Amino acid sequence: MESLLELIKPLPEIIKPEWVAQAAFYFIVGVTLAGAIFAVFLRQIVHNILGLIVALFGVAGLFVYLNSEFLALMQILIYIGAVCIAIVFAIMLSDPMYKKPPQRRLPQVLLSVLLSLLILGVFLSVITRTPLKAAAERSNDWSVSTIGSLLLTRYALVFELISLVLVVAIIGAIVIAGEGRKQRSAK
Amino acid sequence: MNQLEVYLFVALVMFCLGLLGVLQHRSLIAMLISVELMLNAASINFMAFNRFLTPEPAVGQIVTLFIIGTAAAEAAVGLSIILAVFRRYQSIDVEKARELKG
Image (cartoon, rainbow over all chains, first blue to last red):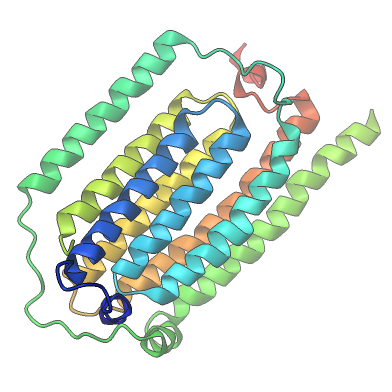
């Protein structure tokens, strides 16, 4: 945060740096929500994935505001660089853009909107009613080296499990994608 | 700017948008995109609680790293399932993959 504020110091005295930081924060929030809305409501899948990319960039910006540049970088590297590009490859399987996207059934859409609004309301009341108190003693050690040493000591088992999950997912993906090819050639 | 509630509200809206997308879309890829939105909402929540409430600010970042790893695995498996469904039905519309409906 401090480095961000130092960056914009040479501005004239009337504009306070805190205001600029605040405006940038709300801009990032707006970008995130707008990207999420594009990702859900647009009809073409290409537009959806572009909206998802915008939303993920916004989330990375929020991570910077939450004091973790490292996770912002990881977000951009893994989510946007790997996951989104993998999804872009799969878009080739969808219908071409000149075809009209399939009509949605009205009762289904209404039901899903109702359910989402219900969950929104329930969680909103939970957020507003819960008293959120900070822990009495808080260290302010946000560094990457702490994350690394914790990953190799206290969370070592979880860390290994994640790598196991990734291996199983890769093997499973190969098996699932290979199965269909066998079926097809057997026909 | 430094308010926990703002982050919680953003994450909540993102989660509900993702839920809406999963429920109403008919294309499997769009549903996968919406699931990614929901996972990101969860990680915003973890990071916000980590920033404002927890005694140790490294734990929430570690949990978020695990979420990112799981999301990568989920995307790999989801895309291969989409590929298999496409090979079988020549389409990724979930309405067409209804053999078990009877």
